[in-house]
Length: 296
Picture 1 (cartoon, rainbow, N blue to C red):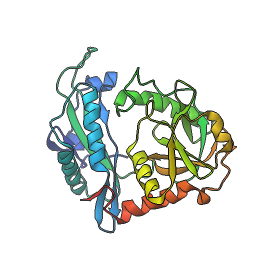
Picture 2 (picture 1 turned 90 degrees about the horizontal axis):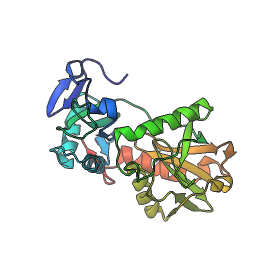
Picture 3 (picture 1 turned 180 degrees about the vertical axis):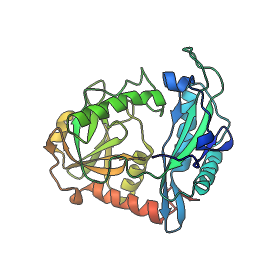
Picture 4 (picture 1 turned 45 degrees about the vertical axis):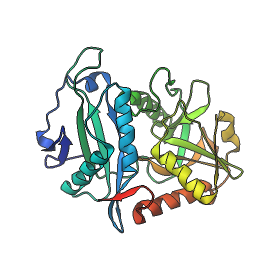
Protein backbone atom coordinates (compact mmCIF):
# COMPACT_ATOMS: atom_id res chain seq x y z
CA UNK A 1 0.00 0.00 0.00
CA UNK A 2 2.75 2.46 0.93
CA UNK A 3 5.74 1.12 -1.00
CA UNK A 4 7.20 -1.76 -2.96
CA UNK A 5 10.71 -3.14 -2.88
CA UNK A 6 11.80 -0.62 -5.53
CA UNK A 7 10.50 2.42 -3.63
CA UNK A 8 13.29 4.73 -2.55
CA UNK A 9 13.65 6.05 0.98
CA UNK A 10 16.03 8.62 2.42
CA UNK A 11 17.59 7.11 5.55
CA UNK A 12 20.46 8.58 7.55
CA UNK A 13 21.81 10.59 4.63
CA UNK A 14 21.56 7.80 2.05
CA UNK A 15 19.13 6.81 -0.70
CA UNK A 16 17.94 3.28 0.00
CA UNK A 17 15.48 0.94 -1.67
CA UNK A 18 12.65 -0.05 0.65
CA UNK A 19 13.60 -3.71 0.37
CA UNK A 20 17.10 -2.91 1.62
CA UNK A 21 16.06 -0.75 4.57
CA UNK A 22 17.46 -1.99 7.88
CA UNK A 23 15.82 -0.86 11.13
CA UNK A 24 16.66 -2.53 14.45
CA UNK A 25 13.62 -4.14 16.10
CA UNK A 26 14.86 -2.93 19.50
CA UNK A 27 14.78 0.71 18.54
CA UNK A 28 13.33 2.88 21.26
CA UNK A 29 10.68 4.43 19.01
CA UNK A 30 9.06 1.03 18.40
CA UNK A 31 8.93 0.21 22.09
CA UNK A 32 8.39 3.53 23.87
CA UNK A 33 7.23 6.04 21.27
CA UNK A 34 10.24 8.35 21.45
CA UNK A 35 10.23 9.98 18.05
CA UNK A 36 8.93 12.90 16.01
CA UNK A 37 7.31 13.07 12.59
CA UNK A 38 5.58 15.25 10.04
CA UNK A 39 3.16 14.84 7.15
CA UNK A 40 3.63 16.99 4.06
CA UNK A 41 1.43 17.10 0.95
CA UNK A 42 2.85 17.21 -2.57
CA UNK A 43 0.49 18.23 -5.37
CA UNK A 44 0.69 18.13 -9.12
CA UNK A 45 -0.11 21.69 -10.15
CA UNK A 46 -0.30 23.55 -13.42
CA UNK A 47 3.24 24.77 -12.75
CA UNK A 48 4.68 21.38 -11.80
CA UNK A 49 4.98 19.44 -8.56
CA UNK A 50 4.48 21.60 -5.49
CA UNK A 51 4.92 21.09 -1.75
CA UNK A 52 2.47 22.66 0.67
CA UNK A 53 4.14 24.65 3.47
CA UNK A 54 7.15 22.33 3.48
CA UNK A 55 9.43 24.79 5.26
CA UNK A 56 6.88 25.30 8.05
CA UNK A 57 6.49 21.54 8.45
CA UNK A 58 10.21 20.96 8.71
CA UNK A 59 10.66 23.81 11.17
CA UNK A 60 8.02 22.16 13.35
CA UNK A 61 9.82 18.82 13.01
CA UNK A 62 13.06 20.39 14.22
CA UNK A 63 11.20 21.95 17.15
CA UNK A 64 9.58 18.60 18.01
CA UNK A 65 12.99 16.92 17.97
CA UNK A 66 14.32 19.63 20.27
CA UNK A 67 11.41 18.96 22.65
CA UNK A 68 12.85 15.44 23.04
CA UNK A 69 16.27 16.99 23.88
CA UNK A 70 17.64 15.67 20.58
CA UNK A 71 19.09 17.21 17.44
CA UNK A 72 19.41 16.25 13.79
CA UNK A 73 22.04 17.94 11.65
CA UNK A 74 19.79 19.34 8.95
CA UNK A 75 18.19 22.71 8.36
CA UNK A 76 14.60 23.08 7.20
CA UNK A 77 15.84 24.24 3.79
CA UNK A 78 18.04 21.16 3.40
CA UNK A 79 15.14 18.88 4.30
CA UNK A 80 12.93 20.58 1.71
CA UNK A 81 15.55 19.98 -0.97
CA UNK A 82 15.88 16.31 0.04
CA UNK A 83 12.11 15.98 -0.25
CA UNK A 84 12.21 17.43 -3.78
CA UNK A 85 14.76 14.77 -4.72
CA UNK A 86 12.74 12.00 -3.05
CA UNK A 87 9.63 12.81 -5.09
CA UNK A 88 11.62 12.87 -8.31
CA UNK A 89 13.34 9.57 -7.56
CA UNK A 90 9.97 7.89 -6.88
CA UNK A 91 8.23 9.59 -9.83
CA UNK A 92 5.35 10.73 -7.61
CA UNK A 93 2.77 13.33 -8.64
CA UNK A 94 0.22 13.71 -5.83
CA UNK A 95 1.89 12.34 -2.73
CA UNK A 96 2.11 12.34 1.03
CA UNK A 97 5.59 12.74 2.51
CA UNK A 98 6.45 11.24 5.90
CA UNK A 99 9.62 12.45 7.62
CA UNK A 100 10.30 10.45 10.79
CA UNK A 101 12.99 10.97 13.38
CA UNK A 102 13.45 7.75 15.32
CA UNK A 103 15.88 6.25 17.78
CA UNK A 104 18.33 3.38 17.77
CA UNK A 105 18.22 0.30 20.04
CA UNK A 106 17.65 1.24 23.67
CA UNK A 107 15.43 -0.60 26.15
CA UNK A 108 16.08 1.87 28.97
CA UNK A 109 13.72 4.66 29.98
CA UNK A 110 16.30 7.26 29.05
CA UNK A 111 16.84 9.45 26.01
CA UNK A 112 20.29 8.80 24.64
CA UNK A 113 22.02 7.98 21.41
CA UNK A 114 21.95 9.59 18.00
CA UNK A 115 18.53 9.96 16.37
CA UNK A 116 17.96 8.61 12.86
CA UNK A 117 16.06 10.25 10.01
CA UNK A 118 13.74 8.56 7.52
CA UNK A 119 11.84 10.33 4.75
CA UNK A 120 9.38 8.32 2.65
CA UNK A 121 6.54 9.23 0.29
CA UNK A 122 3.55 7.53 -1.32
CA UNK A 123 0.37 8.30 -3.25
CA UNK A 124 -2.40 9.01 -0.72
CA UNK A 125 -5.79 10.68 -0.88
CA UNK A 126 -7.44 12.85 1.78
CA UNK A 127 -7.31 11.01 5.12
CA UNK A 128 -11.03 11.33 5.94
CA UNK A 129 -12.33 11.46 2.37
CA UNK A 130 -14.21 14.31 0.72
CA UNK A 131 -17.71 13.81 2.12
CA UNK A 132 -19.06 15.67 5.15
CA UNK A 133 -18.40 13.90 8.42
CA UNK A 134 -20.51 12.74 11.33
CA UNK A 135 -18.50 13.24 14.54
CA UNK A 136 -18.93 11.74 17.98
CA UNK A 137 -17.55 13.23 21.18
CA UNK A 138 -14.80 10.98 22.46
CA UNK A 139 -14.38 9.61 25.96
CA UNK A 140 -10.64 10.08 25.40
CA UNK A 141 -9.53 13.63 26.14
CA UNK A 142 -6.56 15.44 24.70
CA UNK A 143 -3.50 15.08 26.95
CA UNK A 144 -2.89 18.06 29.17
CA UNK A 145 0.13 20.11 28.10
CA UNK A 146 1.68 19.41 31.51
CA UNK A 147 1.64 15.66 30.81
CA UNK A 148 2.78 15.67 27.16
CA UNK A 149 4.10 18.46 24.91
CA UNK A 150 0.87 19.35 23.08
CA UNK A 151 2.54 21.54 20.45
CA UNK A 152 5.07 18.89 19.35
CA UNK A 153 4.22 16.22 16.78
CA UNK A 154 5.57 13.20 18.65
CA UNK A 155 4.98 9.54 17.81
CA UNK A 156 3.94 8.55 21.34
CA UNK A 157 1.24 11.22 21.51
CA UNK A 158 -0.78 9.49 18.80
CA UNK A 159 -1.82 6.46 20.85
CA UNK A 160 -4.40 8.81 22.32
CA UNK A 161 -5.56 9.86 18.85
CA UNK A 162 -5.80 6.32 17.51
CA UNK A 163 -7.92 5.15 20.46
CA UNK A 164 -10.29 8.10 20.06
CA UNK A 165 -10.68 7.50 16.33
CA UNK A 166 -11.22 3.75 16.83
CA UNK A 167 -13.89 4.41 19.45
CA UNK A 168 -15.73 6.81 17.13
CA UNK A 169 -15.85 4.30 14.31
CA UNK A 170 -17.07 1.54 16.65
CA UNK A 171 -19.97 3.88 17.51
CA UNK A 172 -20.79 4.36 13.82
CA UNK A 173 -19.32 7.85 13.45
CA UNK A 174 -16.77 8.93 10.85
CA UNK A 175 -14.37 10.53 13.32
CA UNK A 176 -14.01 11.65 16.93
CA UNK A 177 -14.15 15.11 18.45
CA UNK A 178 -11.96 15.30 21.52
CA UNK A 179 -12.33 17.52 24.57
CA UNK A 180 -9.62 19.00 26.78
CA UNK A 181 -9.25 18.47 30.52
CA UNK A 182 -11.72 21.28 31.24
CA UNK A 183 -14.42 19.73 29.07
CA UNK A 184 -14.04 22.21 26.20
CA UNK A 185 -13.83 21.17 22.55
CA UNK A 186 -10.19 20.63 21.56
CA UNK A 187 -9.72 18.94 18.19
CA UNK A 188 -10.21 15.76 16.19
CA UNK A 189 -7.59 13.02 16.63
CA UNK A 190 -5.53 14.24 13.67
CA UNK A 191 -7.13 17.54 12.68
CA UNK A 192 -8.06 20.96 14.03
CA UNK A 193 -11.66 22.07 14.50
CA UNK A 194 -13.51 25.22 13.39
CA UNK A 195 -17.12 26.15 14.11
CA UNK A 196 -19.17 28.84 12.35
CA UNK A 197 -21.92 30.88 14.01
CA UNK A 198 -23.53 34.11 12.78
CA UNK A 199 -20.76 34.91 10.33
CA UNK A 200 -17.89 34.30 12.76
CA UNK A 201 -15.49 31.35 12.86
CA UNK A 202 -14.50 29.97 16.27
CA UNK A 203 -11.61 27.64 16.99
CA UNK A 204 -10.00 26.41 20.23
CA UNK A 205 -7.11 28.49 21.46
CA UNK A 206 -3.62 27.04 21.70
CA UNK A 207 -2.68 25.13 24.80
CA UNK A 208 -4.04 21.61 24.60
CA UNK A 209 -4.24 21.40 20.81
CA UNK A 210 -1.63 20.81 18.16
CA UNK A 211 -1.58 24.20 16.35
CA UNK A 212 -1.72 22.79 12.84
CA UNK A 213 -0.07 24.28 9.78
CA UNK A 214 -3.27 23.98 7.75
CA UNK A 215 -5.04 25.69 10.67
CA UNK A 216 -2.59 28.58 10.40
CA UNK A 217 -3.23 28.69 6.66
CA UNK A 218 -6.96 29.09 7.31
CA UNK A 219 -6.11 32.15 9.40
CA UNK A 220 -4.20 33.57 6.41
CA UNK A 221 -7.06 32.95 3.99
CA UNK A 222 -9.67 34.27 6.45
CA UNK A 223 -7.73 37.53 6.78
CA UNK A 224 -7.65 37.92 3.01
CA UNK A 225 -11.42 37.33 2.82
CA UNK A 226 -12.23 39.52 5.85
CA UNK A 227 -13.61 36.51 7.71
CA UNK A 228 -13.47 36.94 11.47
CA UNK A 229 -11.88 34.15 13.52
CA UNK A 230 -12.00 34.04 17.30
CA UNK A 231 -9.67 31.77 19.27
CA UNK A 232 -11.35 30.87 22.56
CA UNK A 233 -12.61 28.03 24.72
CA UNK A 234 -15.40 26.25 22.86
CA UNK A 235 -18.15 24.88 25.09
CA UNK A 236 -19.78 21.67 23.91
CA UNK A 237 -23.15 23.45 24.02
CA UNK A 238 -22.00 25.59 21.09
CA UNK A 239 -22.62 22.69 18.71
CA UNK A 240 -26.40 23.05 19.29
CA UNK A 241 -26.45 26.44 17.53
CA UNK A 242 -23.62 25.93 15.04
CA UNK A 243 -24.25 27.04 11.48
CA UNK A 244 -21.42 24.85 10.19
CA UNK A 245 -18.15 23.25 11.22
CA UNK A 246 -15.09 21.77 9.55
CA UNK A 247 -11.79 20.00 10.20
CA UNK A 248 -8.38 20.99 8.87
CA UNK A 249 -5.09 19.15 8.60
CA UNK A 250 -2.39 18.32 6.08
CA UNK A 251 -3.59 14.73 5.71
CA UNK A 252 -7.25 15.71 6.08
CA UNK A 253 -7.06 18.92 4.01
CA UNK A 254 -10.39 20.75 4.69
CA UNK A 255 -13.53 18.69 5.19
CA UNK A 256 -16.98 19.76 6.33
CA UNK A 257 -18.86 18.40 9.34
CA UNK A 258 -22.42 17.19 8.86
CA UNK A 259 -23.29 16.46 12.49
CA UNK A 260 -21.81 16.16 15.98
CA UNK A 261 -23.39 13.61 18.32
CA UNK A 262 -26.32 13.47 15.92
CA UNK A 263 -26.87 17.24 16.01
CA UNK A 264 -26.89 18.56 12.45
CA UNK A 265 -25.37 21.86 11.44
CA UNK A 266 -27.90 24.63 10.76
CA UNK A 267 -26.66 25.52 7.28
CA UNK A 268 -25.76 23.51 4.20
CA UNK A 269 -22.03 23.08 3.62
CA UNK A 270 -22.31 24.83 0.24
CA UNK A 271 -23.45 27.99 2.05
CA UNK A 272 -20.73 27.94 4.71
CA UNK A 273 -17.58 29.96 5.29
CA UNK A 274 -15.69 26.66 5.46
CA UNK A 275 -16.69 25.76 1.91
CA UNK A 276 -15.37 29.11 0.68
CA UNK A 277 -12.07 28.55 2.48
CA UNK A 278 -11.86 24.99 1.14
CA UNK A 279 -12.29 26.35 -2.38
CA UNK A 280 -9.48 28.85 -1.89
CA UNK A 281 -7.28 26.09 -0.49
CA UNK A 282 -7.86 23.76 -3.45
CA UNK A 283 -7.20 26.59 -5.91
CA UNK A 284 -3.98 27.61 -4.21
CA UNK A 285 -2.47 24.15 -3.83
CA UNK A 286 -2.96 23.25 -7.48
CA UNK A 287 -2.52 26.52 -9.34
CA UNK A 288 -0.40 28.95 -7.38
CA UNK A 289 3.03 28.98 -5.75
CA UNK A 290 2.78 32.24 -3.85
CA UNK A 291 1.11 31.00 -0.68
CA UNK A 292 3.79 28.78 0.79
CA UNK A 293 4.09 26.40 -2.17
CA UNK A 294 7.48 25.50 -3.57
CA UNK A 295 7.89 24.01 -7.03
CA UNK A 296 9.89 20.81 -7.30
